[in-house]
Image 1: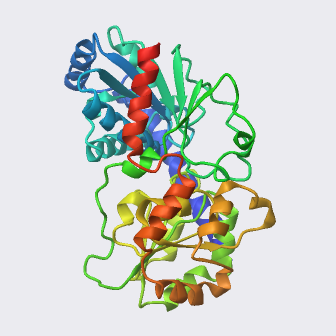
Image 2: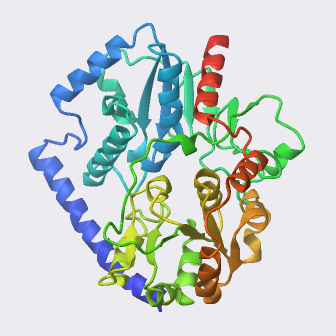
Image 3: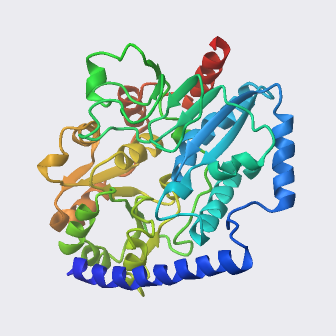
Length: 413
């Protein structure tokens, strides 16, 4: 039933997007004379050029990304570099987001660019250091990088950089992530976790041409602004953060997930979708908002990160993937995992579930399990410390450890 209603919403929004594309084309053709929508204003471009000119004599780092949430993985390392080695490094955030069909080069990119700059400000990083890969040629002598860092495969990225670091965008690899990715060019990897919570292949041996650095999970040190979804309520807040797997989300909805949340009005619920699911490509955001219209104790949040929602919440519900581990490892709060089909078993994410989950259940039993887990209260300090020691490859200040390794790599090159 949910799938049928979703398809109706999806068709309607798809036609809305076609109309938007026509408007974009007309604006570019008639008003901008064929120029791109995302070019920076002249004054802003001059400020960026001044920044580039001042970077002379510094070591240069590129961080490349396509989606907003990847900023949270590298920004803590950037900040630690500046505090540990003031004035030595200049970091440029280069997005390849126009290569994504759902963003493109029109209005959606303008919206994306605004989100990036707002997030950089929250992370205490100047938005002047953010560039689209398509605008680099507009600047005089854009400096070459000494080190390139990325979290993902970007086919269009062709920079010639001697040292390339892969920064995994998940703490706990899934079953399909048997070894390090083969579609990303790198000669260093910052490993967040230790066996058996890491890549299966690395439990046997490391690839000789790749240097593995155990730095922990720097994202846990990302600056964050707590978000209060229910500022006027003292009821406990429960997060529901499903994985990227759309079929699992609709399976949970078909089996009565929202009905369970509706009945449990003595709790507040926040539904936090994976950033890629929240994209317009899937139209899931609009559909979920429509389903929750008028329900006061269930809030839908598509932009805030887990770190922004952690302070207000007491419990997280998920299915598989890294978010459950990130929540428990980062904030010492309890996690319930919904049961998943057998094909999702075998990864470090569900190994973590088996060792540390506070509850594992079917959707139909979720209400009772929420009640029993909430009665346990918060994790003790010893539970929290022991878990981090057992799982993370470096359990202290991982942002500073990663910054130290970056400096070591630069100094050796």
